[in-house]
Length: 146
Image 1 (cartoon, rainbow, N blue to C red):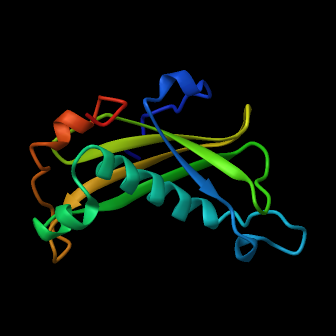
Image 2: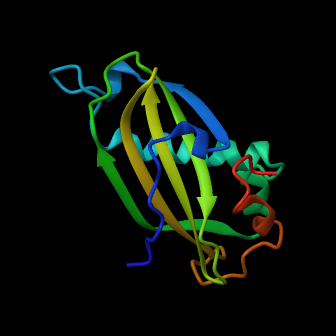
């Protein structure tokens, strides 16, 4: 296990936030957002962070790099429901030659609903290990992505 980041429940510890609105299609019979939908929320927030940092993911891919997800941990604290406006706070850290980690805090209003961590590796178009882009060092460790 590479995961070492412990995501905070304090939104002030994050320098980037992305808001999503949950969809009815993501709910179960009780109106609760299915746990699998959280993965897409994290991905959307991560892509938004890269875009805000001047490196839209589609451009990263055109440079021949993908950020494969190696590990994912979600701690569900309270459920999300249809039509919730969820603020996904994002922080980055733990950059090595092979991996980097991203921490997330999901909140509705002032209430923490989940925390999460993803661990990523740079890979080429064939899925082989690739060099981390040099610009990534400027994003990782800088909460606002700049």
